[in-house]
Image (tube, rainbow, N blue to C red):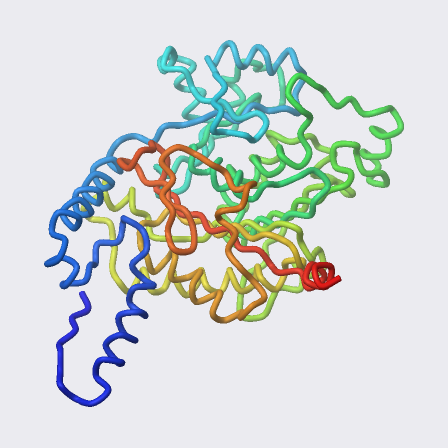
Length: 409
């Protein structure tokens, strides 16, 4: 906790005001545990309420993470309908990505539960499920197919991708794509047919796609670049994509490109060649708050948080360099640490000057129950009106100079 001591020295009041203004910038969001001592004395009830909210979050992190289903829109309609019925899937208005369903409480035992477990994908902070694809295919509601009819993930993963507002025809980069839940969501948004429709390629398209000389109809007009430098996570990502997406999307000339570029001070040439991008997702490595709540032996220190923040800042700078003017970055973490959330965005905005701005209040920003505004983003925290998360999202737009020229005229 920062402590300010009054003094009669010259210029002291200005120094104190300046320091307090600087500190105030880091206090956004209900989940920050540090408070001014003066604030605690002036408003003890409010501080007690904030402490209770923090305790509620920590308690809810010990509760199993609710999952949602991503229906595979690339398989035949009869398979989709059969999967919705057999897995007891139901639509939820908060999820706007085509194919995302909530799970009914009717099912959760036997083969249905086993299939869900095998076809689940989550980060360490969400339980650490890695999909067991051969098992999932064997237990699938459509076992004769070589494709998974659906996958299971968390609502927080969906909300992070929804914040990017991907439209078909755009060029999108997922900078940290493994193990693959958000990659499947992005591919579905970019290339998937609408609900109740199928995309049947013509004979010419099918032959051309197999030969690698003609992009498939599903892959035309847009591109999804999935970058994952970690070998183990990249292997999981590749296997998951092959089990979910059409082969023509992943083949030569298809809309999905895999990359394994390590993000360093210099922007990777492999990613720059495929850019610039309309939208970039920075789903940054972060402190595993849920793992810490579940495991008292989990290694957690201020040094780890600081190291994570440095990596996150590097990823965000690379994303800024790869983004088109007028484009959008979504910076997301599953951390409750201020230093990994608002502070990373704050330092990025200071570094880039007037070239970027946050747009978390725009009309196209996702509106979900339980969202809590912070200084530079939005937080979703269990125990604060939502079952999703922890999730922090900041939407950052790259200013297009042409827009100002148009306004001037």
